[in-house]
Image (cartoon, rainbow, N blue to C red; front, top):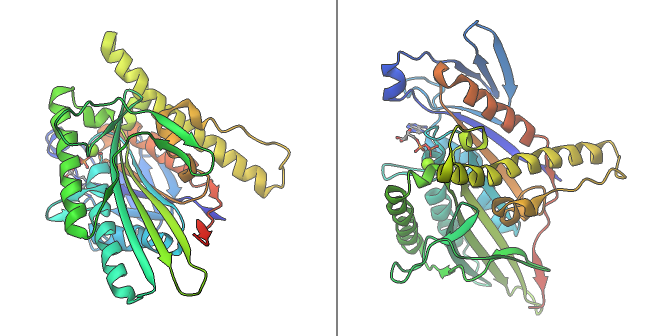
Length: 358
Ligand code: ADP
Ligand code: MG
């Protein structure tokens, strides 16, 4: 059994916040994150990691590398041991989700670093009795519909893919392209292609990236021929950049904007419901209250359905809550800290996905 690991990361004040003369209302000390309201009252939260990335001159400053060392290496370890793994980034638009997950050319985030780590570990393994296979897919959920970010631009119809459920392998997206990649350069090319497809769409669709969820998936297979009985382990790694969490709260929007808002709400709100239900189920299990079997509404949204195995199921799961340091964002930030606090209580049961004699 393994608890969901939760990290909170605070970015620097941005120009808008500085122009507004916003004050920093977040403080961190070890694992503790403290938020202070206008009256000077503190609320404390404790997480597995509290990352201070607000001020690079601070000696406690957390770099992209540090975040990878703590969280990314965990995912690599899980993948090589044959477990599924998942990292999802939650938080208000502009709080630093994409920065942590994808990063920038000069400051790569978790996704490029995990991919790089995968290849360097394969090379370093020096194990000629294991064959590795790496496949990548990259999708986007917008308005509860799924689009393939890696389908060749020609004839690419966005957001028309269906989610189905395999009795043994679980939920999957029908017709989503899977790309076999031989080296890191191959993954990098796909990553860039997918990111471009996501950005191109956003200029057409009213800042789509704040409304859509992006899921980068690595399917990592190890075929082992150490004995007469070959065996195979398959690990699925989901790296998820969620829509802005403000979409889970009330909006004053009307008409088609309301529809978009309502649909985005559905995946994020369902994620919240699923997290609460899983946390409660985990508490019941600890108290040996197994009779109280809780229904977890995974299938109520596309996001939670696809991440079913990663949420309270067969996976090592990590949540990164990205927050702004500014007092002007106090209420969104507090709601993110509370959301992250609930996720801490989930206990997963990862098992190795081994298929002997294949
Ligand atoms: P989101 O994906 O949550 O909407 P972004 O990751 O795009 O937010 O971040 C918004 C802005 O803040 C970007 O310009 C990004 O470069 C910057 N930023 C976010 N996190 C950090 C960080 N830890 N250090 C430096 N800059 C950051
Ligand atoms: Mg983003």
